Length: 276
Image (tube, rainbow, N blue to C red; front, side):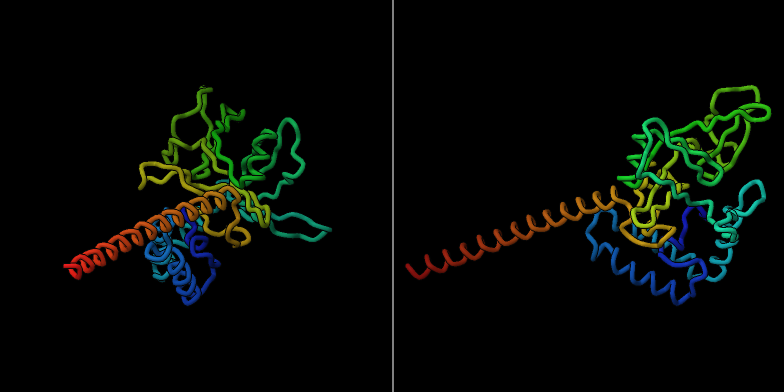
């Protein structure tokens, strides 16, 4: 069972949502993304993801198995909880380590650093600006840091950490999940809540390894559950809809022209028959 996709986020429901709430959410989104109604280029792929999510979450046994695997995956290797405690005004609060809230409004000239989970990201000023205004940033980092007995690496697909002894060359694949793109990351930032998070998926194997778009991975922001959270994706989808509307206008114009020519032809035949 695939646990790299958050099926709850796909349907836009909470992990404790009832069966009726899941069914309602699926029907609402299905009406929106069904290829017979939605003419966007990615509508069919969106519908496939919705159907897969509903198939798993609507089956009590499959959902229970998925929840178990999902919780196990979210547990860090150190054995500590993925929900970290922090102190605010003397009170203990719980923060989700999957999200970071760096202030990107005042990016420095050289580098910009923030921690997301167990990974410390160091972005250039240009990269920070891209993440701030576009809402997404793709990159490749070796994650090679000095360890106790070699170089330490961190897989961006399965979050596995390991050390390479006696070698300074970055490994070709992750020893845990065998991902060859283990060093490639996709950082995303919500324009509503400003949460920064990382996608565990990069490319779609069903489409020849083509890169995923953020909306294919997260139709709703996984933190605040709001739509249209990615500026770059908003612009891309707007262009797709504008192109689809233009094609529709051309098609209707062509059909109207054909009908007009047909009517003119019929009238010409009738007129010639009357003249005889």
